[in-house]
Image 1: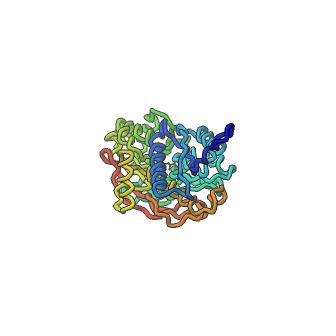
Image 2 (image 1 turned 60 degrees about the vertical axis):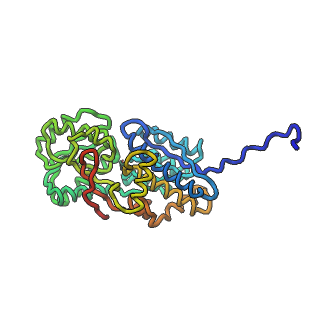
Image 3 (image 1 turned 30 degrees about the vertical axis):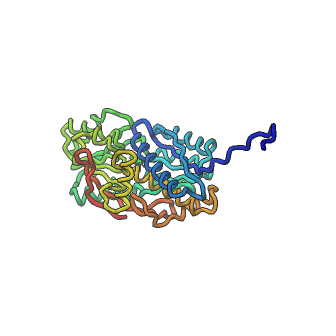
Length: 365
Ligand code: PHE
């Protein structure tokens, strides 16, 4: 029986392997973060239903970075020192991931960005990975599409000069489009959160472009499309993955229809594993998963696979296991990490339709 005065035994160790997530759940990038979190959560649920990893269950700790680099850095510090996570997943916007990588790398905690495409992110060090392609490829894809498919000769650019993503993508697009014999008629800038783009669009209109490249995020692009049409600019807008949000259709209305953007995946892909993911995601969250959801799911699965293969859960062991990821069947393509810790994958071009982005073509690297 009980010995009087003996304290109760300590609770059993919780036995969870914790993944840390820092992403935007509020602000102008909120749909990016919500989709990413959902994708990660779905991957964790499935892994736990299949028995977990190393006899333990997986769990996640999520912080809202509000779409800001400073908050992203703070969130990562908290995930590392307070929550002692094994792997960090995030973020979407490259400017946030750059700030996060600066904390994760010196701490020796592996970080996988699902969807940041700026090359500098994984250049922060050997603990920083991504499961998506990079912008030198994405910029090439849209330059080639503009030249070959749309037969555009003259294109104007409207970039976000506070976003590492937008600046990087502009640089590649301009270089590639020019190399292909096209001409850039104007380069105008805005800053995240602006609401009036009429001055820049008026300057662009004077140069009579065949299309306008707008490598921004959905919250600004939707408004830019409306203001362009109000000013009588009827040419298509072209963009990158940052357009991917159901909010784009709402903000852009009919003004954004007929425009094109490059992206990581199309939910119309008929491969069985993609269709299973789309169905499971719909059942859990009630909407068609965007590329962020697919890449969040893929990043979490790559982390889970590495935790299974690693001899132990220390930072160096998990880092090495992630680095060895090969032919991993992701939803947004097969993932093999190269020696720069990037995934080399194909891109899709989508056309904005009525409340939906329609698949146009796939471009291989
Ligand atoms: N690639 C963008 C960036 O690096 C983020 C993004 C990815 C946005 C996919 C939407 C879809 O900033």
